Image 1 (cartoon, rainbow, N blue to C red):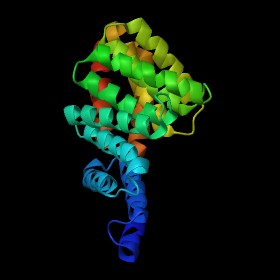
Image 2: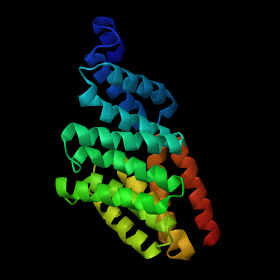
Image 3: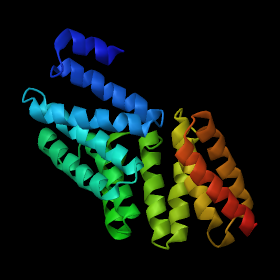
Image 4: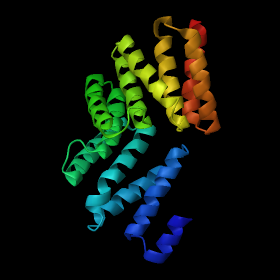
Amino acid sequence: QLLEERRAMFGENHPMVLNAMTNAVASLTAAGMYSEALPLAERALALAESNTDVRSRNTGAELTNLSQLLFFSGRYVEAEALATQAVAALEARYDSKSHLNISEPLRIMGDSLRALDRVSAAITAHQRALSIVEKAVEPTHSDVADILVSLGLDYLDNRQRNEAIRHLERALDIARTSKRRLCLARANFALAKALGEKAHDVPRGIALANEARSIFQERQMPRQLQETDALLAQLHRTF
């Protein structure tokens, strides 16, 4: 509604419309409504790139938002390419390679690289993101947990299970103190997956996966529910 009001008031190409569009994309993404958010994110990026008054301020953020949605949509090649562009845009904007805002597209880049089976490159991206975040926020901040989860999944795919579990246990400890329920769900899911590898601790893995599932169900996130149900089925077969 706010977006439509600002369009009517200012016209399609006004910076206030872009701000409302960006907020709408964030709300839809948080609600798991990726197909609805994607065309809006594409429009927001086009608007940011075409408006010289807001280009340096918003292009990196819009590239980040769109790359995240492409990742959620399974379009990993495009997601990695746009996340890489976002990193470059934000480095140029802040004249820095270590600004906190650079960590998010680095995380998305790494997640996309892992999905493309480029695990070594994913680890490099996530290690850089973690280094940036740990210097900028408290050690118990949920942003640290998010990147630890990504890095733990990298190590799991790289057959470094002990290293994966170490990172994921730390992520879960942080997530349990966070108010971000999805951060907790993601940490639970990832650690459950790691504990199920070679039947390391299947009963705990089942408990963690069930906890993740309840949060995904509460948030009405069908893709995550499907993934969690598949993991639970696998864990129960192992058990």
